[in-house]
Image (cartoon, rainbow, N blue to C red; front, side, top):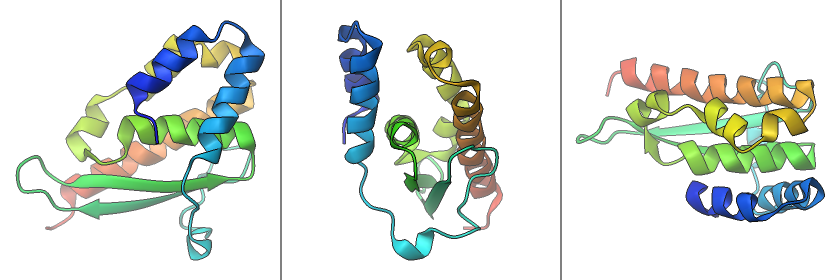
Amino acid sequence: MAGIEDIIGNFSILDDWDDRYRYLIELGRELPPLAQDAHNDANKVQGCASQVWLDTTVRPNSAGGPVLTFAGDSDAHIVRGLIAILFAVYSDKTAKHILATDAVKLFEEMGLREHLTPQRSNGFRSMVERIRSDARAALVAPV
């Protein structure tokens, strides 16, 4: 999967929003499949118009604190692309890094907010809050 710098760079060279939507969809297609048993109520993100599942794995890391890895899926192609962007920002990062990184600001800087429906923008924020909530929980969990 592409890193966030690559995604931002690719996004910026695409002038047409139809091309950007296609790129988002392509990013979503590159997501590894989410295990069928992870499509459950515990992983379902509330506040999204589409169905979205985020599965979080936390592993201890003595140097920088817990590291979170995410897997996810959605029934909407563009939303899968948004999940891929979030994973490029947050997956395999420490909980402290996750809490210090503003993906909503990045989302706005990429121009996504004004080019997606309000429901998709709200869903994106719901996914970010879910990831941040998991990071906060990882910081207070016993090791």
